[in-house]
Amino acid sequence: DNVDPEEAYVAAVSSCHMLTFLYLAGKEGFQVDSYEDEAIGAMTKNERGTPWVSSVTLQPKIQYSGSKQPNPVEEARLHHEAHEQCFIAQSIKTEVTVRAG
Image 1 (cartoon, rainbow, N blue to C red):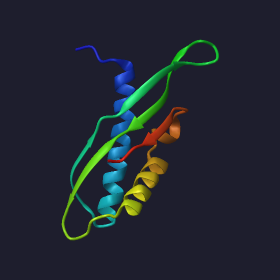
Image 2: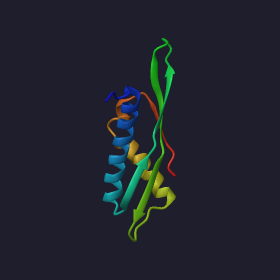
Image 3: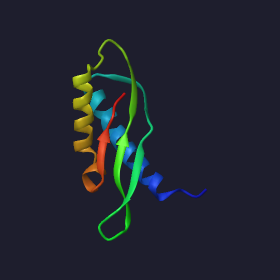
Image 4: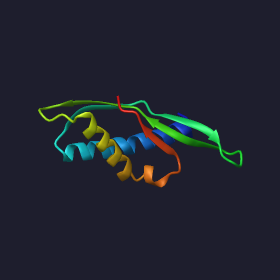
């Protein structure tokens, strides 16, 4: 199977965010039942005309269970902290946006 490098890159950004988010949510006592993300990468050309992935949009859909559920503000904070703590996101120039839904 051939793996598209752009898809692999976007998947790596998405996976790192997800794993960091799950860790942080669990630490705060939130039970995540499912986490699905249909991440999208945008290829553009840089100032030298070289193609690169200039942006990645994460679109996580998360299901929780249990008595403790995050409100929208808490969930947004968890996504922000996950981005800040994800080593891949901190290692790249690509703009990463989270559109939680």
